[in-house]
Image: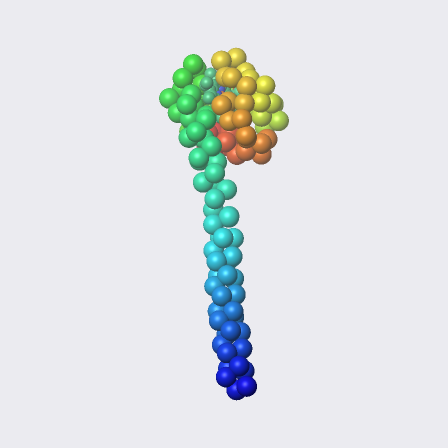
Length: 114
Ligand code: HEC
């Protein structure tokens, strides 16, 4: 009976450690969650908008070119987002990012305009 009892205790301790590890992992996940917002925007940018906005293909305002973006930013974010979604002059609708949400477009536009 004593042995049974010890085993039971060991199992409990082992589970306790697993929980602690799990909690630590969760904490890491949360930290990464915060930083990956920007990383995702970068990834989306590289996979879509960068095709034209890196080098200014077809007359696209270049990413990081504040003076090129300033007059466009004046139109306001809702107009800019709708231009990307519906297409605008030489820019195809959705800007090659089919799974981008409005909030993603906003983040991408801010990234390019800065
Ligand atoms: C195939 C090329 C191409 C891709 C890909 C592309 N764009 Fe563009 N984009 C353009 C061009 C060209 C213009 C300039 C249009 C004009 O004013 O003549 C432009 C303009 C814009 C503007 C300004 C619109 C305005 O009203 O002045 C925004 C905002 C924009 N792009 C966002 C994006 C975002 C966000 C992405 C990625 C999801 C993207 N673009 C992907 C070509 C592209």
